[in-house]
Image (cartoon, rainbow, N blue to C red):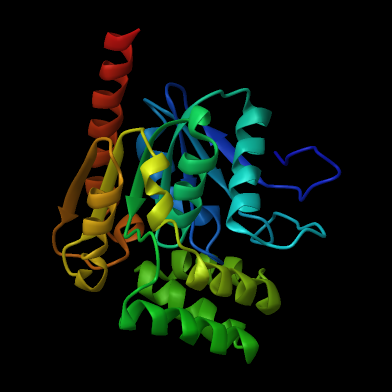
Length: 265
């Protein structure tokens, strides 16, 4: 079972499949690496696919350091080090995209390009703010079965996959998940986005309109190449509800970026 080996820091569980340019997938709090089963299956023939459990999630452990977006981003860098990978594409879903932004800002030399699915650089809208507050309330009340079932029902259609995801969410302690929600609520990268210089792809579900306005902040503050794609007939759950479309989009994004790198070199 691949786990980072630094005994002084949280052990991070990760899985590696395939060959080719590496892409790392970052899940939202609680959901774990199982979120990206479809992407792993669909991309590994052409890319090295790395999925992780963020600290305190799934099979990953914790340490005595206070949770912060920087520390979570640093954990991902440790996974890259374990895999012997200098640079990778990083794809983050929902609040996992905040980790990706921190990676691109704080560890730019390790990043080839980033993909944000339903991403936001800060929580500045009524609906999103209250979504985080609802998560904080539910974890404070220790309603982990409710949280797990809601996430599983929203993301998966097949009963066996729903059960797998629900069981995985339940592995997170409510106290630690609450910390993640609080961290996500207060995290703000907007004023630091100018530090992102790699290619950026924003992906939103067409019906996920309550986060669509965040694209303007990314396009305003990131100086480099920012493109956006709306995925039709879906809301927020693009990685599980629109697997084939997402895989096609990611392949196209990385192929174009690889061609640019080859041209520069």
